[in-house]
Length: 251
Image 1 (tube, rainbow, N blue to C red):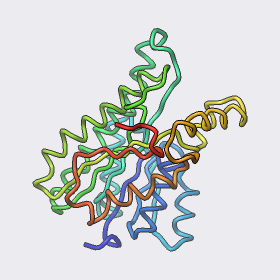
Image 2: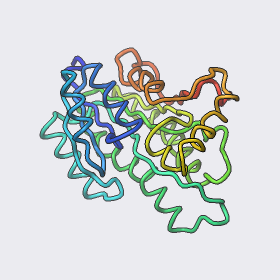
Image 3: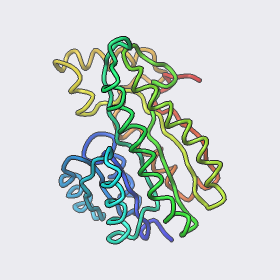
């Protein structure tokens, strides 16, 4: 099948990184299923206006029944998922001693459980087709963890371990499993963690001084890597994590 005959599912596709990844995959010729708890109409309209195909699916990735129903609907309406980008996630800056079990579970239920449930739901269809691409969005904080993000870093590190383990199980079916680990990126969510634009830009510039590439990161910097992992050209690449942070995390 060509990309035009394939469907990419992107979670957390309403804004930020997920929206950028969805637009790039649509540009590559994939039909795109936009999965998010929030409205995806704006992203779908952008893709359709550019000549692509997209459809939104409202889904709370903390709800196993809703995930199953969403994947079933994508199967019926868009031919099933050939590419899955597990992008949806949440973080919280809280010192470790102040992280209670409720906060820990809130982060893990989306970042880890949602990733697991979405992946498990699409694998049967990929096996039937003998082709699939699973791409987890991790974080460079797994390699240079900042203070106050223990739950988030633990969840994103789990996604990298999951990639390594799952790649070994699925390669025989023509399915690759990889992760991308962006650094701090300019998105509405990241901006929203700061009281004003000045403090946000100071935070971003603090990373730039330690990067090899002296630029602030935007979603468009990592979208081409998702495009590569989803492509035919990446058929022999699996179980890998590619850090896309301007050379900040050197591991």
